[in-house]
Length: 256
Image (tube, rainbow, N blue to C red):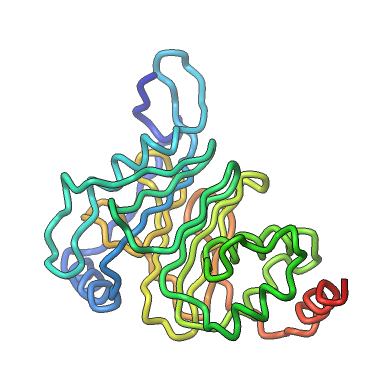
């Protein structure tokens, strides 16, 4: 099927002036310190011209278009033609450069990428608080750890309260198929860049630590902030600092 429009409604975006765009992109270039860059997309719905129906675009279609617009943060030159590996579930996908050194976790219904890492002491504490069935096989795998924490806390009243327990210098993004939603967070250190934006072809949500060429407007996720949800840009939330309930949940698991 051929997809050509994000939906049947015409939406006009106000573009920033060229000078403002150059200023913003220069600031993003200074922030980006990672040589390995990932792109996550939850595609929006598009009109199928052939069948006349509106349906979700496949993640691989959006990822191919997005990776063609990645800019090398060190040179400012497009990485068009670079080889990326695609990892997708039904509703979302991640693209990473071949031979990427980023921490990644892929399962039937979850994808997670971590830039940077948690502290060793924090990692041990978080692992001890998880049920044995959810503890990663590799105790040093921060991507698998954050994916397990996400699953464990979905049953709690405050689903994202565990973010207050993460310590280290990191940025991460996770998509969970069961909740059809993503969670992306950046540590208070702020040395690892993280941005969100809109997939211009489908109106879906893009989360990345890369810089994209003009036409893909990105907004920085500030240090010590997180977003969650799908489609369009998400509201920013400051990482919660009330830790009592999180400690109770983790301590209860340690007692089991």
